[in-house]
Image 1 (cartoon, helix red, strand yellow):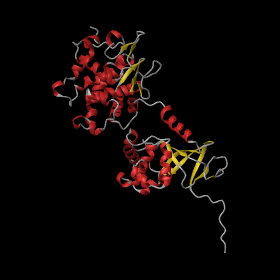
Image 2 (cartoon, helix red, strand yellow; image 1 turned 180 degrees about the horizontal axis):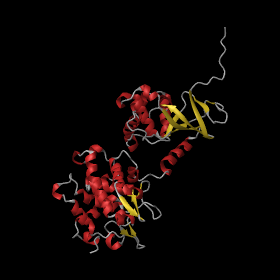
Image 3 (cartoon, one colour; image 1 turned 60 degrees about the vertical axis):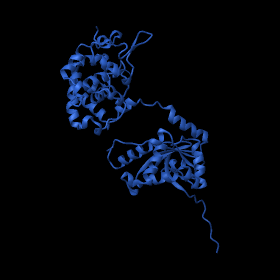
Image 4 (cartoon, one colour; image 1 turned 120 degrees about the vertical axis):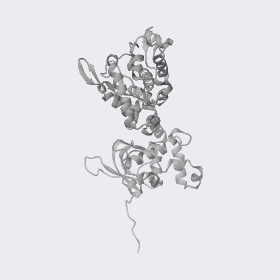
Length: 408
């Protein structure tokens, strides 16, 4: 008896997708599917593992090298471990709903094995098949891909299990049958064309950062007069920009207010921490968060209320470097400051009381600002650049800078 062979049978991994252009689709896949389709970049850079790998894996590594940077000796490789821990924390519910991973961008190097008709007429949904041995490479999101491999290789280390990981759906976009040069161009566009977010602005968006949370508490604790009405100071804090413009309703950025808070916590060391995360277990002298809040919030809220007019008039007090200098000064009133340099809140009020906050060169040029060739005063100097000079001028009125900002 002769067996008849099956016709039109296509083997491989099936994915439900929706095309968004003629050579690209989007969809979701499971973690086991991802680690099966895309070999571990970490393993492909290990000479010992690569030497013992199959010819298919070695060819995959060679093609990957044409469109990706290496993990070794780069910040990218250092980010894999923290990324895996972040994902694990999100999966375990430790981050609530406030976590996310972007879609992984994959390159299918060659034509598809099969593509179905629409599953539901008019929906755009289709099923595609990736044949065994097909080269699928992450051209964006490779750090995340490596992190998923680490999680799947050893889930117990991260407090997870294989069944838990198998239930996860990962968003992806897949570019099909592109030339290597086109895949490299997509890598370039994704990594270079976008404008990087300034680190201090990004930090002000991090609601798990204690400095950011404390800045919000300070803003919420003050009411100020605006056009004859009492409004929460929080309404005057811009949370999405690095600098406020004349057309903005807000008068100060959240990142600048955070600089005030962080320097109040750490003094001069806070200048370096203005763009770094602040964790609750790093608070000064092992103070608990509620103790810090009970101390810092009233002092800074009173300071803002006392100088509310200078804030609402957008004077020099709203500049990030000036707020950082004020924070360094306020640090001396905190109970955890060095007792040799400590002073009372009354002394802080006195030191700030006779400062000329007008945005004029005769007061702030060379301290927190620079005068350009056009004669315009520019306060764009950063917290780290000018915060220390501002603090010196505030703390020591008899110095040249101290006399300058006081109009002497």
